[in-house]
Image (tube, rainbow, N blue to C red; front, side):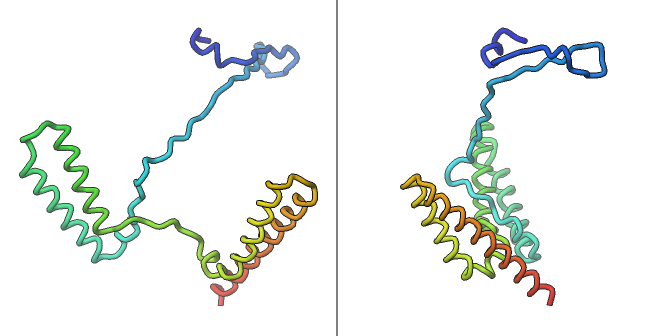
Length: 168
């Protein structure tokens, strides 16, 4: 192990009785590792690329991208490579945003069709959770668990109803 990585090592042990089917002993190592999730920058929403399936949008997108490339090649070369790249990037982002728009958070079809039935049950679960967090008692935890079960039951019913409706 490298010297700089020893600070992450919690424990190393050799398990002499382990049968590994080799002539080596099994070494067990515990590491203290943290994984960092990097959120996308604020304001960066994904584009609605599913709009490209429509032939009219695809042709419009291609035409505007060709225009952006033509204007960028006509203007390019006066500034440095970094400035050219940043202006081209902004042009492409503007075309994509203008033609495609930004995608919405997608929810399953069964959720959207059963939304009226699910909203009161979800609101009840939310209130039960708030009560449980406010008063840490076994009774409030039991009410929250019951609300969770009723939400699961309502979700299953919404899915089944939607599948049955699609099958007809």
